[in-house]
Image (tube, rainbow, N blue to C red; front, side, top):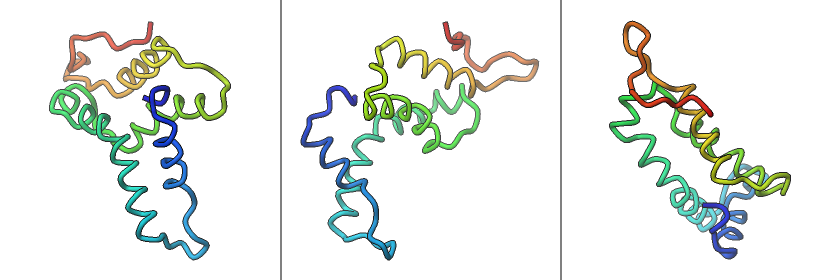
Length: 119
């Protein structure tokens, strides 16, 4: 998602997500842009993380914190240039998240027959 984001959209994202004014208020146009950019990037995550399947197979979790946990490493790597994240790295991040939040049924059995443990 980050690698394919058009430069103008990325620039708008940085501008819209910038600091609020010193008095803590935000101009209406900036707030509107901020909401639109955030909504665009979070929509795919909301769809997946709030799906009936996810709610059945995973424990209760904060969706916004989950997005930070999943996207944070990618955003940090991209912003700093410290590491190029491959598909394998992304799968590893998701596997760790799924393992950490896997719902357990009575008797210690996972809610899903899938093995989410990182490989």
